[in-house]
Length: 265
Image 1 (tube, rainbow, N blue to C red):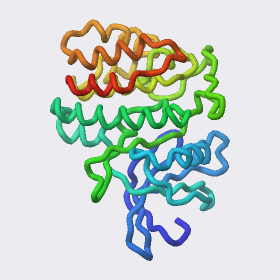
Image 2 (image 1 turned 90 degrees about the vertical axis):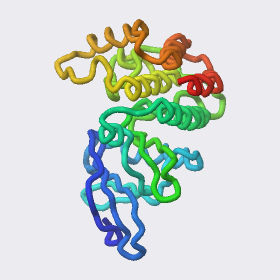
Image 3 (image 1 turned 135 degrees about the horizontal axis):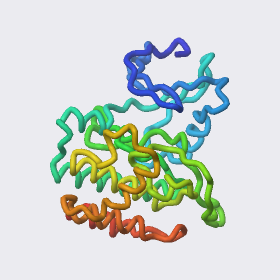
Image 4 (image 1 turned 60 degrees about the vertical axis):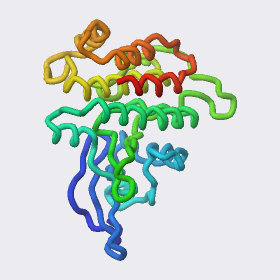
């Protein structure tokens, strides 16, 4: 990449680009690079770059090193992070201790608040988008992939977006909120509902709708509506899920309350 970075192993890929581990040939420093075809009209990499730049300084947001073009790709270089919680969970036989789940929850509630205070919602919070730091930051978790993140309110007036039916869905069905999966405008509560599904996934080892590729969106929504009836899920996580689903679209979230719930897992 632009003669200064040597591509190493592939870290991941999706509909919005490919991520590689790279090494600076001059300094031997390691970074991550995200590539997206520049001539792809659906590319969101520049959109993601602009959002991540506005979120710089938040502890769980990776540092942006540079953005540019290396034909035929747009290129964003980030601080090196690895691996994702999804990979770690699978390597641990899909079993995390209650203490680990508590730590994950506590670490993710605070940056979610910070992102919301910056007038954005992530909208695609899932285990593969949560990475572990390297070096001195191995105890820190980082949120990545802001390709479908959006501004939910005016940054100057704080006027909230109107609740409406958008008619389409973007994101991961597995961890998306019920409301966004039904095609409604996204809000802060949707990020928290996704976080609740993630923690339930880590606590139970799976989710009812995972492992069933034939399920359509309506079937997944129906199964999500039944989650609150399951008594094998830790009560704090059920409370968190219920709380996120009970909020009005423009209602402010009680983040200290969510942190308190994490302590009871």
